[in-house]
Image 1 (cartoon, rainbow, N blue to C red):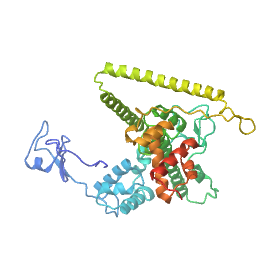
Image 2: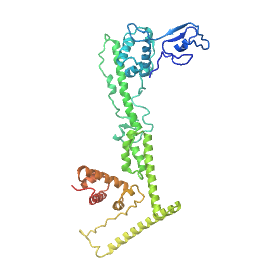
Image 3: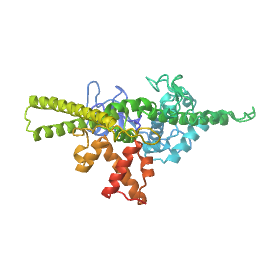
Image 4: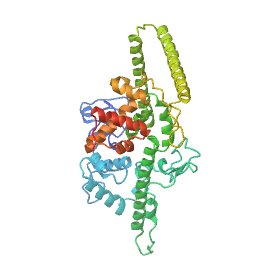
Length: 426
């Protein structure tokens, strides 16, 4: 709220000296009514000095019902809130409405100025413009580290990295308000033209501030460099997974860059701790109680997995060699062309992967055979079930359209969900 220019404090008790108050004519001391009536003295001031009674309920202008106190409140609030913010100005004046403040200032301070001294009052930047203006068409500090060597990408919010500016600014026609035909002649009122020019400048400033506000949103929420953001999210593929991290991008509109970084890092830490808990549970099931035993267990487990892979590979090679030497299986089919056996993939160990504890035994087997991370399978299952509940059935073609993975894996997931009764055919 604007400060009262006429408010004075009592020099004896230091409280606010409400009107009417006493002013000493000899030592220039202000005294409240209570201190004056009790005859208090301080320093060089004596209670027998000449005095004057001060009050500010007299009008400053002829044929005006505004008191000097209201005039000072009006001018003080104007210097604080700026010209045009009559709602706040009327709240500061208290005794006048918004329309009364506007009409009074326009009449006695702009149109019919009765005193020449009022024309000498300096205009401050705060009184003319309550908020700082945008000095340039584009903010020089829009991006401290803009992307370089990128192709023209529509996802960059129209940002041109080579010029460090936006190719098409928001409300790019804002400056066109000055492109009017100047039909003004010398006979016209200069004050009206000046008022029109001031109004146009204020309108331009308002539109430029809105443009700047939108640019700040693009900058603060990481919308100017989405490619860099997606490359940063790749570091969380082992914990949050790509499907989950891309869904979390919608929270960027409610957070700043630092807040979103802390949010993602906290989720990443949660997933890491959860994976460690799953690993500790596995250690406990195998009777391991020390860290050294756990380290030895993981080494032996890795050696066992490598040995199993080598054994399966050797078995596959021996089987292939046997099939090539067998007189029955070496027959030529389809025009003397041998039918090639497709190489089978080795099942994936999903014990320590996120989402393993949420799977049933049959789902664990399915994810291991098709080499799919449990968390990804759960997201795919959720999408397919949602589509099935939406239209009442699900076709294999729709499933392949929804999930962009290998078509063979999609077919196996579709057949499994269909056999378990999760989805239904049309």
